[in-house]
Length: 355
Image (cartoon, rainbow, N blue to C red; front, top):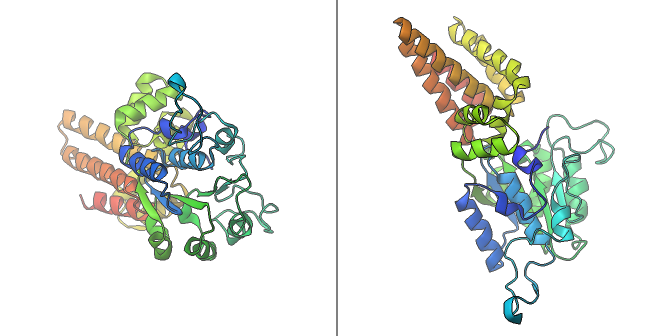
């Protein structure tokens, strides 16, 4: 599983300063840090590739930073500087809190990452590898075995759970017990693009922080910063639904074959006299949900192109193609609003068939 491109390319400095176009979320985080009222459990909600993981590790940095909240040393004219609200970004703790690209895990002992498939079966006491979900073995090994103890380095202990909706029922219930009675200086940050899949009891014990889709110009800038050619970056951003991750997939020629298969399957499902192909494509969307935004964006682009060609040729199907293209864009919006992948695809194709 690949991680957020915005995080993979982040510099080992204050990560919160690198989050783009998420002013509301950053105000919530900054207020908590400045007031000393950091909640014990946050749920960062929003599409993938909009900065929520970057913000999560930025908050973790701040919580373990050696300088934040302490004596920042002499400033101008000998007066003491105000300690930073966010992480200093330069200390040992700040550097180690940033996950390494090769392991996707933090090397700070008090910043613990949970994610499906991130650990070998042996590391978490399983006989088989995790493939479908985050198992109770991860929660037992990484959370329950550590939560009762003080942080190793005295500042705070932070557990970050990527794709928290992938916690299976046993893992979620085990985590819930810790959320109900958190230890001192212990914080959880759950990341999810589908919060409706989480247990209501977990939702009620976390403070939700929303991350919105990014503006196209911000996605374009971030894609260019990743090395994407400017013209391709602009085209990809227009179809990415506000996600840098989706933009990278759209800009990657190696992923074009997968997108083309999805587009062809969607056209076939729309034209089929039965609904079986619709259900099959919707079911497969659950497995390919990481690439689903770029697949639907490619479908919207293909429909727009066909609609324009039909209009120029004076064909009667031009309006229907344009309407279907709008349905695809609506599906992208639903995904950005944390809609379930299978239901979004099924609803999109069903509406297209009715035109």
